Length: 566
Image (cartoon, rainbow, N blue to C red):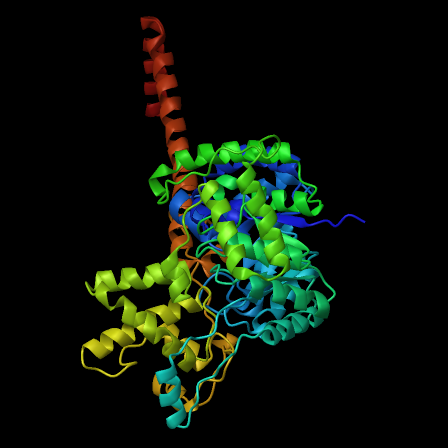
């Protein structure tokens, strides 16, 4: 039987680490949808992540309307999928059950059939509620194991720690760690497991070994999601295919590569060579790619890369002999775990397709690209960007002290910002942790959930004022205000239905402005229309009067005076 590889297209949710995807207007999305319907991807990831926040913030568009419009066009041809942070949903705040239930029920009813659920701490307890509510409403639970790297310490740091009687851990995020989490999620009701590498930091051999271990230990389908930022993406995708992955996340050529997912076109070429079917209408893919190029040109003002892949038609174009051989070689190197040569030939293939060069700084630092740029921006604001190398050195120490959270959003940002704070404290002659963000305090306190390693009680007391872990307490949750607008009529509120109320809860600042503008637009236009109607009626009456003869005008005047005297 011919093996089939299912493809989840993430172009419309995650193109260029969400940058392109979240700046596409609905009108641009609408141009793509009929052709995506023809393409027949297993799944389209179109929502969640940064999409709801960004399209309100930058495009003044309704996230629920986007999802429902996509569903109306795609129907049941492809699964629509979304990305959610479990109990945190989209932000830093853990939410009570009623919010989690309401969000997932509305998401499934609006078109999501697969909810991809992750937790930034890999705390499965933060995932279980979403599993329950997604499945209750007829959706599939795609549960995520977030890939991350171990903190890296120098021999000197390890020796110093050993002499103090607190030896540093050698390995935390082992293959067994990920396998055990996958098995636990399967038992909790997961319909599939995603190995999600949000930063693109998973080397090919490691990716292959984890995928293989998943296939040996769990019975449900395995998905692989990665990015190409530091240069591993294509090589790791090939290794995942070789090791039996069931579903692979890709983006279409003009939104692929660089900080985005690997290119579907390159994956298709690999599958052709391996005799693996994807079932995708390639002619439709070519047309989608053409429109994506047009959209990139339309979004030139936010395109920081300005590097466009070569024109390539997967249905008819042939590769140069040397590039074709590189792909053959890549397959063989992936089979033998020859990582060095695999990376070399994949790099040559991506260079031929004119994808952005790997980000060596991210690769060296082993931190997500967004975390790296945020730390640099924080230091530039303080005019102390020369401190960045020291900040990178401090990250493992800060991370270990905080329970070694995975370097994924939002914990990567929390750790990065705190590392900057510590280095600034040190420069100012103060001890580390003199200045702590509220998010770091909450992380150490236990508000966000259990960390992969225990936080030292002494450190927790120093940072959060308690030796005991204090998890999130739903009793402390306060719903967002939903003010009325009496000037527009009785019952007019900022959020007029449950979906809008959820936007307020999940994105209080952005949604407040978006919904306020929406109320003013709808009801302000209604009032203007009513006023204009009165003006038009007056003008019509005036014109009618002016058209009367002098005798008719006099008669009207006499009649008016008669009634006035009454």
